[in-house]
Length: 231
Ligand SMILES: [Zn+2]
Ligand SMILES: [Zn+2]
Image 1 (tube, rainbow, N blue to C red):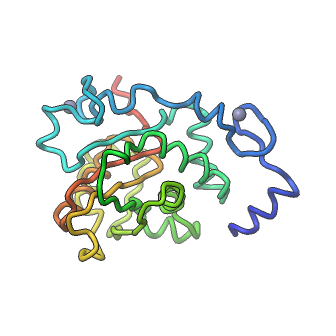
Image 2 (image 1 turned 180 degrees about the vertical axis):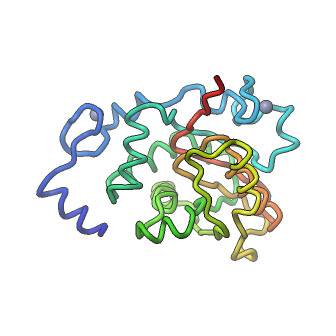
Image 3 (image 1 turned 90 degrees about the vertical axis):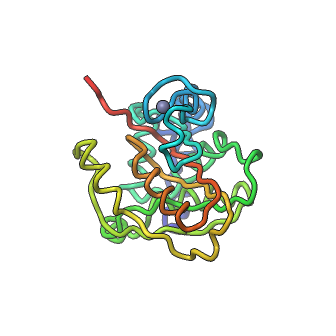
């Protein structure tokens, strides 16, 4: 299907979802416009201002993630359109801007022994679609940056996050993952990639599984953050 998408792009070239410019599903200018400049500067748990790791000093001791960054706010139409394109339309073209967006916030020069790994999408849904969007984005990112890529987690349960409460999400995410290829993880820094996150609890529980399996550091990178409406 990837090749079909590629072949079709010559017949019917992509247009930027935002400004309609011909050539790409999302042009560089529009991609830059949706970048959330405050990402990393507010704590993902408590929303307080923090230095640049996305986790404040107070929350850090209780978190398995060493840092978390998100490129954009999901409420931006372009961000959500890209996520939906990748998820529902089988548009492999969406992988490229999303991988490159993640590259710009990755801080990889300060991390050693990196393995890039996706947060796997719930098995049944990904199987039904035939592809896993986090897998595509993380593979694209690893290739672009010349980093090792390994799928280190297996999803053990499927739980639809959309429409569920914060507590349900956090309960369900506790039993989401198991690590495989444990021998490959030892002492490495894992960059975990997901397309969308809301509370970050799924990423954090994935990080815990990887740390229990021997990871030295775990950093979360997400294309879009869906902020919960607290009002
Ligand atoms: Zn554009
Ligand atoms: Zn905090």
